[in-house]
Length: 340
Image (cartoon, rainbow, N blue to C red; front, side, top):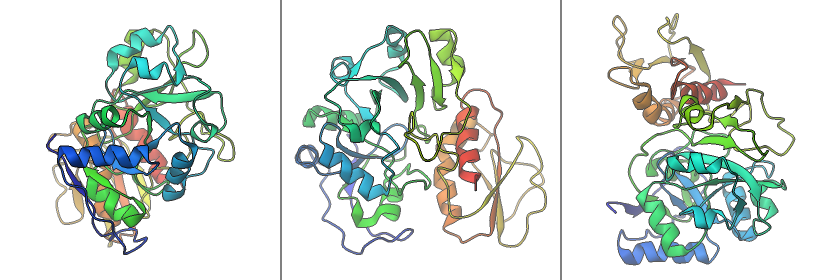
């Protein structure tokens, strides 16, 4: 697999000093991780989007541990990860439109469908729908195979904070509250999965932009409406990541338009560009991509936000992306991270 299992100390959001022993990166270690999950424990696993805090999705007590570790409100449902369409059919009722979307699996796409009775209420926030995904990351797929479970795996970080895209991010923000961490290296996409709602027959709604862009969805489904409203923070959410404020560092963010000028950058502030920008240099200037690639910028966004947040800055000026393609997901994450 090329992955290692690690546990370490917490230095960003310190929760406890007691850290369990690490699992080795061996077939025996992978089997041990699967065994922990079958026993109702939580394991942080890499996905192609961000690191997830995994637990048995059909075990209400195991799922409750995820909410407790993250400090996540029970109104925010969890995404269920399965290895294939046969396993998906055991937790959700397939929709005719799913045939077209299945071309994107395994991959960074989540689909909201009508739930099966086997899925506990804690996973769905008591709703009659469930969000499901067939992931592509080889480590997660191997653990799915070994465990034989459907796995709930929200981002492995305190609720509302910047998502983790490296194993060190999980360690830094959860400390020993996270029982085990599987280090699969940096995540390929760096932003959470695209979420499409197919729970109403004949209707497709984009609930959260992600690595699979709206333009691609339309080529497969035809008409796709975009849910632009902010979810009611006191009611059950249709899907994760819909609250107005989310993915947020402790440092305040100020956003500026793609290609625009950040304005004055004061002492104790930093500016974050998509790519290198002529005329802007110095220790307070950072870029997410050498050539302004939005895909590369998205992959690096959460890592840089975490590193800047650790500096105790007064303000981060952050450049938005052109809104097409993955730019929609990039802008969605920054906009929610900047909300107050």
